[in-house]
Length: 295
Image (tube, rainbow, N blue to C red; front, top):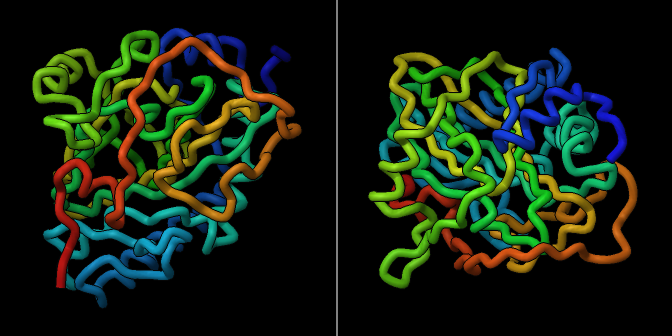
């Protein structure tokens, strides 16, 4: 492994130990402003819709998804699927930003893009994320897979920050099935156990939480009256990590090499993981039991 370029060696070691790392200044101020402006525009656009909308993704799903509490007066936009397909700004940040360099320091030098999305918690919205491990949604031949969660807003416990369980990336893979159905979350018993050991990820807009794909994580609703909580989430893999299940969010940029070169072979590790069932709805929130807005 070459010496890191965007991160310090101490930061890399923290990621290896804990399974996550919060790093500041992952994008430029201009990049951050562009991302936020577009997101605010999509949120305003959602006021004119009563159910999921927008240019369809490559598998025919709606681009934008809102929670069941959505109204024109209090919009509840909660997901934008693969925004890098429709926005030059989101594509630039995904493919060529300091955030991308940070990921290369962790799983590079050869890095490819898997998918991206924005998770939004509008003020006083009901949106939450039950605990899960991302690898169970996107299993690969190895687990050099990083979920980069870029903070589009200042994030704290009041507006629904991310919670992670340090060191859980070295533990077992937990089932996301219940009674034979893929529910995208652990059982209530495991959820309670994970919450007891979870720590909040708080920080300033423009920071990024770099999270190992096997880290257990979740988040609560945004209880603030007037503050957004947006995360631009980009999933990257080492170039020699090959998917063993269909991408739950297929996109035109899947497999794009963002650093280094393509890999001529797949690298395998000794791991067993259940194969997920892919969602047919606008977002994974419905898989976890949270209904979308309906006209």
